[in-house]
Length: 152
Image (cartoon, rainbow, N blue to C red):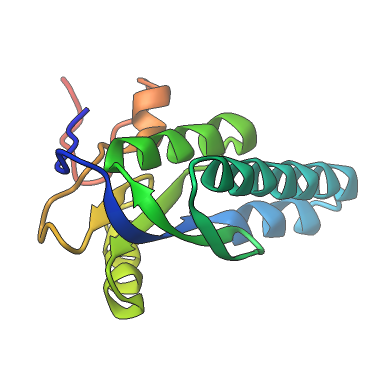
């Protein structure tokens, strides 16, 4: 994996689940209350685990609610990739992370990551560099990332 930072540097990271509302809506429309309840518990426990990982690495959790978490600290981008993999493994959904030095930077980076299909990290400090491939297709080789021509 590409790690554009030779040393860990202080950053803000905003992790947000991709298409979480669609999953919840699907269960609700189908009347699958047990499934939405189970998914909600998985989501909550996953964010709690991510929160603990941030704290264990000396970082600070600025907020943790819904399907997102804002954290700060000295982290390598490669460490952040592990958070995306954990989120996917435990929820079956991808997440995206925007990284920056300010709230405007990490928020814009997150929006760009989501606009490119999700499952990505965008570091605003490294313009136009997608730090990670689509996490979902990396975990499930049967999926092709959005914008990638299908193999013949």
